[in-house]
Image 1: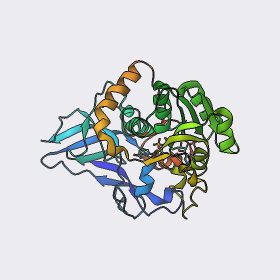
Image 2 (image 1 turned 45 degrees about the vertical axis):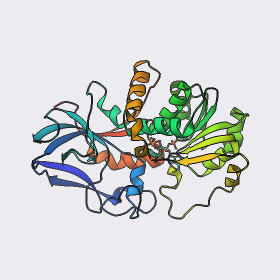
Image 3 (image 1 turned 90 degrees about the horizontal axis):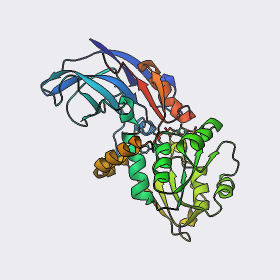
Image 4 (image 1 turned 30 degrees about the vertical axis):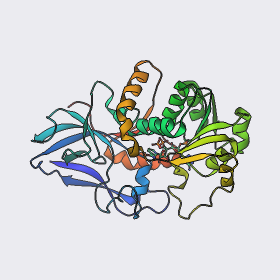
Length: 336
Ligand SMILES: NC(=O)c1ccc[n+]([C@@H]2O[C@H](COP(=O)([O-])OP(=O)(O)OC[C@H]3O[C@@H](n4cnc5c(N)ncnc54)[C@H](OP(=O)(O)O)[C@@H]3O)[C@@H](O)[C@H]2O)c1
């Protein structure tokens, strides 16, 4: 049997293009003792994968050239050679970017197939956990506070906004289109939303909506967003630095925010984090998020791309704002 998978052909320079990737057809090996053959149903594309395309030391090793990319996926076990889960089990694992994979038990978790399978790559998966841990641990939201979220219509941002609302905060979100702004106001429940591409000076635009300033900034973007956040933060504010997608394709090091000095008089706490630092919060996250979903207090959207051949478009689309909510690629039917 053959499987199709996406290889990294060369390391992207700037925004990745189709020429950086290759769709390869490869034979699927038989599972060795302790292994399983799994059929991927959905795979995730995430902004952090851009960092793994660069040859450098980081918290995860770089992707290898000429080899399949890796990333979160939801799969069904189709053959087991004494592997950890029986045939038919739905799991999440890290051998995405391919139709079939032979895996052991490392990084594999069984899932409840009663929830939509793709949700385990978004609201019930890594982005949901990122929003939950980042906001609650590093934002420390208190009732009545104000929260500013960038990339607010994306996978992580849309959940941060809703969790902040659940915690009794007032929320302002930014996104890159008027449709996304409407989504933030009408579905996500933001108190205010701005299209950062047309809002003009972000500091003025945020201050016009929240004259009293912002207690928490959930940072997904960097650049002009961080400059504006530093300007509008209230004393003793917290900045939870989740990502800086504005820099991921930069070919030269951007200038630092000229107003960083504001951390001193405002006594700001700026804290970067990686979701995997907080796996101790996973049980609480699953309990709270499942309850909020059941109560209708958390809603989510997905942008679904069809077929392995669309995976690179899905990935590159993240940097062009093409996704609303979580971007996923469907690789096969839920059930065979
Ligand atoms: N620290 C961690 O453990 C961790 C875990 C997961 C994610 N993250 C980070 O969290 C952030 C959001 O990730 P996600 O998975 O939820 O992605 P996402 O928000 O679903 O997708 C990325 C979005 O970023 C916006 N964007 C892209 N380039 C931009 C730019 N130059 N300036 C402003 N906005 C831009 C686009 O929306 P617009 O249309 O609004 O521009 C795009 O839809 C990323 O920075 C990611 O690296 C960190």
